[in-house]
Each structure stands twice: as C-alpha cells, then as structure tokens.
Image (cartoon, rainbow, N blue to C red):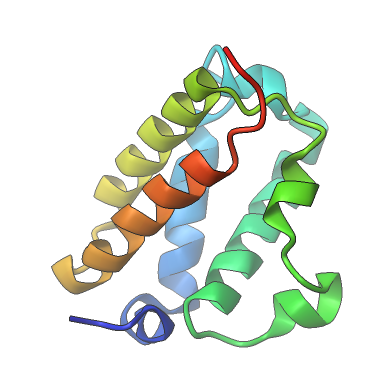
Length: 126
C-alpha cells in the first residue's frame, strides 16, 4: 500500500489541480455547498484546497510557508458543517475523484482521508 506522503508522486500537482477543479465545478449547483461558498471566493478556495492537498500528500510545502499550520477545525469553525453538509461535500469530492482518473493506489489513500476528514470537521448538529 502507498503511504500518504507518496500520493503526490502518483498524481502530481496537475492531478491535484484536476481533482480540485472537478470538485469546485460541482459546488455552485449544490443546494448545500453553493450556499457555503461565496462565488467571488471560489478561485481562492480552489487554490487553498489544492495547496493543502499537495502539502498533505507529500508535495512541496508551499501551503505551510504561505498559510501556516492547516488548523482545519479552526478554519472551518465559521461554517455550519453539519452531517448534511459533510454528505454533500463528500458526494462532490467522490465524483471529483472519479473524474480525476487517479490510480487505485492513490484512491486507496485519498478516499478514506476525505471521508474521515469530512466527518472530523462536523461542527454543528443538523
């Protein structure tokens, strides 16, 4: 099995960009996610998520250098991340993963990471 810090070697920056672009194409049309993401910040959100994923999975440390520790719970605290929001986010990310065309080895790491992290970020009851 591939280690988390080896995923970047498998997908590279272009792969993570492809994934994040596929995800954010789904956001505006989603009834829950669309309300959570200000339309004028979608490009910024896209850049932040891509940078985080690149750093998290073994790529360059640019995200840390520019933004510091990810502090995911703190950064998401202003948003109502309910079970419903988690499910919508995960549905969009799963579809984006399918579209990105990653290897099975990369998906074996990424799918549980996204599932676990989305659940970890729940901060409000439905």
